[in-house]
Amino acid sequence: YVKGFVTDIGGRTSHSAIMARSLEIPAVVGTKEVTQVIAEGDMVIIDGLQGDIIIRPDEETIAVYKEKAAAFKEQQLEWAKLKDSKSLSKDGKQIEIAANIGTPKDLTGVIENGAEGIGLYRTEFLYMDSEDFPTEDEQYEAYKAVLEGVNGQAVVVRTMDIGGDKELPYLQLPEEMNPFLGYRAVRISLAETEMFRTQLRALLRASVHGKLRIMFPMIATVNEFRDAKAILDEEKAKLEAEGTEVSNEIQVGIMIEIPAAAVLAHQFAKEVDFFSIGTNDLIQYTMAADRMNERVSYLYQPYNPAILTLLKHVIDSAHAEGKWVGMCGEMAGDQTAVPLLLGLGLDEFSMSASSVLKTRSLVAKLDSKEMEKLANKAINECATVEEVIALVEEMQELIK
Ligand code: PEP
Ligand code: MG
Image (cartoon, rainbow, N blue to C red; front, side, top):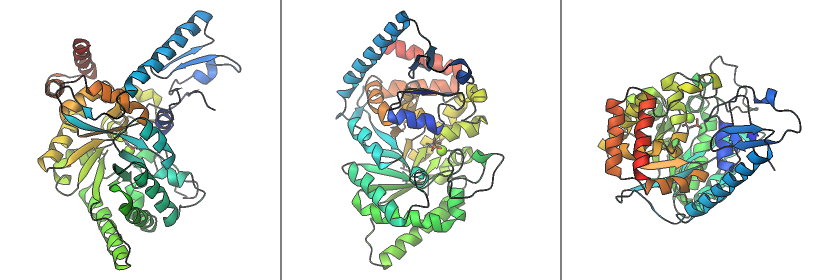
């Protein structure tokens, strides 16, 4: 029943904002003070596309926004024509546009929007929706439902990423000064291995029902990846010894969301099957700007040349080892970033299902060779994020 929401706190990549995007609920977050300005009973227009809120609008403004809403619906119908198309650039380069999900219930949006598989299944919501640790069988059922629900397309399942802004009421973790820099994700998995092994067993059992890819979050060192992979291999061997069938085609990759992993991507690339770049965290750690903190949100700069330089190194390193690279952070569906990412050679773009068709439509207008020049120019000649935005806008004017 929720038609929209606005908040004082948070940023574009807070998980409440990400969930709103996938549920297609208009939302504006991080206004700092909106709750002090809106009174009970006020009419509010929420323009989630522009990030604008209009409180107590007059008749004329209401009419303008009704028209805007109708134009957006029409635009969506236009995009919907691309539902069953491949994702091709103007010069015929094929990429994959996949969707991010948090629960098997999100599959409806994935199918409706013609996503090419799942680039990120955030499994921690399975834990957060539960009163206690979900059992191996409960997890198996959820993973099987997702693998079967996408008609043979690939599904990248991320092992649980609890911590940061995602808490589990039944997992008592000590309070920390900096939760985003603390005990989180694979750091918990490698310490509380029983919980990790249960998840891996459920995943391995489900692997026979589709095209499974397993990914570990918040990897900072090569040894963390080796340790996690060793546990996965042990559980696979145990299941097989018990006579349980497990797929031999499972790809195992990591999220690149810690600058240390991005910088050392050329070493990681020798050992993993793929990378998925988590820009939500990678940007906050590179810029030292909390993704949840509206006071430093101006530093949350996906197109900063520093970020683009890191991305280029990650993508080139993977390609040098014959591995593919996806991106599952919100940047993958950002319309200013897409031309740059296409130019950098990103293979898979994974985003909220609601952004898939709009992105496919944008990619069809872009020449991949031209975008390569654009990305290189941004990296080699731009000093500021404003300069990069100006470059992209200039290009967008030309292709209009
Ligand atoms: C990311 O960090 O970009 C990411 C996709 O993971 P999450 O948003 O769940 O931290
Ligand atoms: Mg992350």
